[in-house]
Amino acid sequence: MGLNSFLECRQLECGYPDRGVLKGVDTSFEPGTSTAIIGPNGSGKTTLLKTLSADLKPIRGSIRIGDQDIASLSVSEIAKIIAFVPQQEHIPFRFTAWEVAMMGRIVRSAGLWDSPEDRAAVTDALQKTDAIGYADRPINELSGGERQRVLLARAIAQDTPIIVLDEPTTHLDITHQIDLCRMARELANAGKLVISAMHDLNIVGLMADRVILIGAGAIRLAGSTEEVLRSKKLDEVYGVAFQRIENGGRTVVLPPFASLESLTS
Image (cartoon, rainbow, N blue to C red; front, side):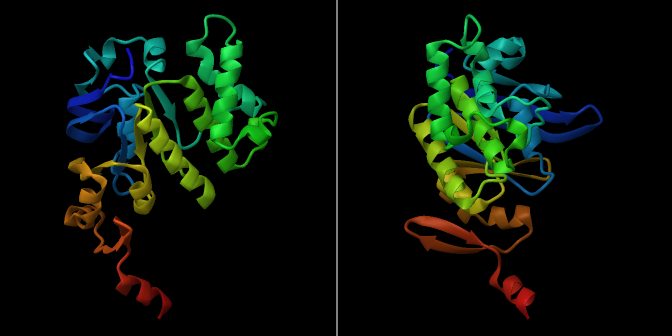
């Protein structure tokens, strides 16, 4: 299955055995795009990503990749199609950053996943995420931001047509947040599908060309980034009267100025 594959949800309901989270999710994701999923805390962003990545089984409905139902694919088949970067991942052993990134090559290697091609892919991924400088350090001695860059490198080295990122800017400083936006755009421009759950609406404006807004257990709006950021539906879902500023052809979303004034009075 190549880069022309796409991801489609049909009447998807996702959640947990004792609690449904989202219902009636009908949407598709096209290759060559970067899509951000936004919504208030607890709205189901992570649950949706885990379901799209086959980490959670749908309560009902289906997810199709190309012409196949994801439920019909094996774990190794899914790992060749979807790379998932969690918000946090506990790695109990003293693997080095290089070794963690190399784990992304397991599904690509016929042998011990340490071929010249594997090493070249991991070197390239660590360079792209600015993590090559601490490749030999144990992962559990790195800062949160450094670990996040290594996990992103692992996903890039996995070389899948779909990359799913759960709050990828968590722990990253502003320089590396901007780098992440650039990488997401470059991956999409290379034909990959990038799906990210995001909190910072202005980082969304830099990173994504499509946005899905979720709230109250359903998709409330899906469209271009500018369309969603400008929509009053955004204010309704978050319960905030956002201020908007046009800057260089992009919409910047700010909290209501009245609320800011009340904080300093």
